[in-house]
Image (cartoon, rainbow, N blue to C red; front, side, top):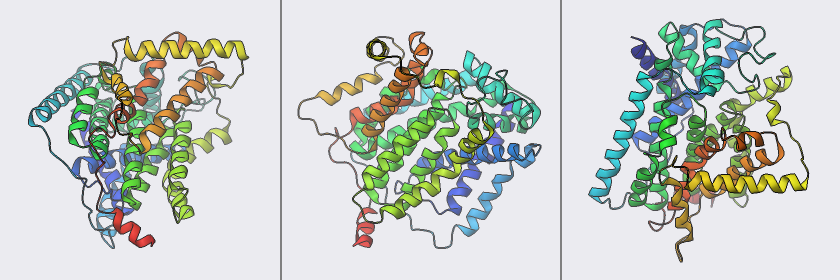
Length: 453
């Protein structure tokens, strides 16, 4: 029964997301059913987290019925969203698919996904940060049905400044179950794993064709640390998925000119600060990419307004609350300047430990080796958001180690691998970009360009 209740609650989450997409008439130029399901899942997570947070701010006791209220978006969206809805657009060009390669990729992805679901099913929440900080905070939110009085004034529930987006969703699943059941609550995370695999596959396919996408799937699906994070309740996998999805829809927008793609990219980017503190600088990196990409286009201000309209409702409530309420952040995140000799030593440690982690630790399989494809002489250089965001994300994490006391987590090995996990799908997409020839084009771009002219 706990698993059934959790599954029903997750269906409600996905239906809420689909209702929001329908209500806002958001359609991607990549019109496949799996991509739509992933977008509805992500939008539902954002809606559930933001709704739960607003209830807690208003001191409304959160019941399962009240937390499920956003599902009303689905029937409303089905009715109101039909009026004037944009026509479905053509999906990306598929290209030939080697049957043996396709069968191997499908088999590996299915086997790893089955393993992830099984491990999440049979094991409780484990891993120190998952147990001590993230899911413990979700349990508190479930038991208290909101914020207890001293939730943000002490360290008894982990660092009080850590975002609560995913713990709120875990608390909703627990409310649907009726009691705290760790394995059933964390069934959310295998879904993040599957959604990430599909989104990575779709991104590479759209940029480089199906053959490269299948190779990317074979690289990503069995990556040991990625598989492990599909079975535990850490926040790095959700952060990686939302970042990848923002890049995917941002890349689609550059190819298609579709308003729906732009808004979907902004929606995914906007939820990043609700997942982890690292989400805010990653949101800034994505926004910088958007401004850089649109700087020479007509209607830049209109596009910027769309980006902010879709992203800020999901990130601003938490960020404003932290600022107004004076919620203390982790002391490890405080900025510092240790001096040039110390900075040089830190930089050397970053480069040395990163190289070891990427290619020698064994936690990634061979996924990171896809970056070596960038050095093939004469290979076409891929474009799109992935290389920009990959570089910006890498610089963000490096800056955290250089200029904050997070440097200690680099040395003790607790953070670097998780930071790299966030960037791994983008690295695979970047390494494989352009290898399959010219990227597939959607049928919407000529229409958009005609409208501009």
